[in-house]
Amino acid sequence: MSESYKKWLKQKLVKLQAIDCYSAGATPETVAKQLGVTTKQIIKLNFNENLFMPRVKQAKLVKELAEEIDLRLYPEDEEVKLREKLTGYIKVPKDFLVVGNASDELIDRIIRLFIKKGDIAISFAPTFTIPRLCVKRQEGEYITLPLLSNLQLDVKGMLSNFSDKTRLLYICSPNNPTSTQYKAEDVEKLAKAFPGIVILDEAYGEFADYSFVPRIREFENMIILRTFSKAFGLAALRLGYAVANPELAKILTEKTPLPYPVSGFTLRMGSKMLDNVDLMMESVREMKRERVKLIKALNEIDGVQAFDSQANFLLVNTQKPCDEVNEKLLGKGIMVKKWGKILQYENCFRVTVGLPEMNAKLIEALKEIQEEET
Ligand SMILES: Cc1ncc(COP(=O)(O)O)c(C=O)c1O
Image (cartoon, rainbow, N blue to C red; front, side, top):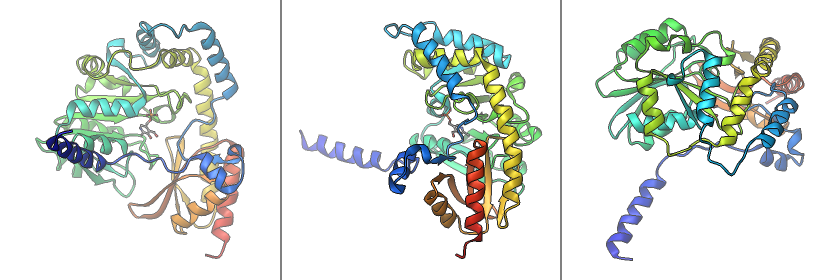
């Protein structure tokens, strides 16, 4: 190995090691081990998964699929078939659709296409963190503006921050972690004024009051992201899609992935879920019923404030320090996502709307924690 090669490699590795990476934190298994309980006893409310999707019915579809699919073959027709089913579901033509390995991968594909060193991407804070990571990896600059105190968009502030270097605007609505869906007229104003690509992340679209998908033709610069990980309950399979005008959609489909990027099994399972869309819709209805009850019950606890939600999770602010609340919840086997200070709210965490028995345990645990002497 030549000295110059060694030097180059060392420098390269140091630079690569400095890149931020995603850390999901403790897993249910590690928490269970620490507590000396089984993983099944852990109440996992930290990832906004759809716990209302009936597992047994979904498993039946997987079994059917296992019989039907020939895993020896490349999935030549599966993506087109899924896009056909999607057109039936969201009522948008096939050429507006891009399929990917869930929204994270689609975000990465878009950012790799549109952000290069020195470009600026802009968003609001707090929001979903993956876009920031992807922009940093491209050596772009990522800037954020705080949300308004009512958790809505600061349209005026954002408009005055657009420049000819801002290439990408990321809006997540309903927003993770605040659970609010932004006013449509605010999103519209920003998208129409923005001189670059607008990613509108609708990962929680099925739980929300409205979607921009039916209006996609109005926005030449908008890419809407949807996923099968949330309402459809397929987080393990990693499947998502983007909706954009055909010119953008074609570029995203043809210029970013390598051949057959999404597994045939995953694509077919997506199609099966769309054939059984009522399973998803019923689970969303059930989650919404529980969401109302959970917000009410949490707000009845002294020192706990739960915000309104248009997603399958809630933002909760406590009087007690969030580190303490989080530790104590973990000690009771309840996993939530700790956030800390969000705008004027000091001690926030995000919690998935769980099944009734899970929510009951969460409510009980928070009552105990609030009543304890610190
Ligand atoms: C707003 C938002 N977008 C995207 C994702 C990523 O979802 P996936 O990659 O599973 O589609 C998440 C996951 O929590 C999210 O909250």
